[in-house]
Length: 261
Image (tube, rainbow, N blue to C red):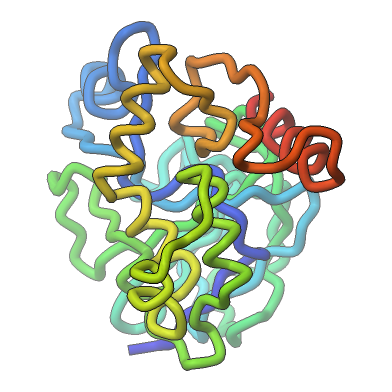
């Protein structure tokens, strides 16, 4: 199987499988399923934050099977906007909401080749890249419209790509509002990629309990990812995340404010 890389610098704004409340209903499970008649269990790809015009690179060697408006492709669909679909032999990767493409159908690409530039075309509320994996014979009733979890492909990396203590600290401060303990360091350091660790932490009981408490207004939720605060208004960055007035405090607060908007 091919070794894949992230098509833009990795900074998730929404993970595969994520769901969020909108008007009292779960967006994917309730609203999209009702609107389309297709069963949705959650977000069907990874959304990566990318300013308008960010170069988007091929995740692995392959052949471009489609480029253009998703409305003209049965698998990609109108919500994808301008998009690219690449065949890697055993799986496809899709790149959606592009501003424009730089490749043609049938063109062979190498890993890292620029295939387009990020935008906000299709069903996008702001500039970002929707990145997805599609099986060669998609099961469109799997709850994710035939898409597969990118984590299972992106985790196939070398030792140099494993999470560092800096990355682990960042994830724990953002998701849990605390530093990683000895158990976390033993579990994750040098053993998993940063994205895999982030996914693991977001599945933990501690994180889910914090999100539930935040939605009830019991705790400050500025440390949570965008999909978790979509309908909750953050107040202040907790002191245990960063000391008020410090450079770190200002940076964290400004970053989260931009994400919230």
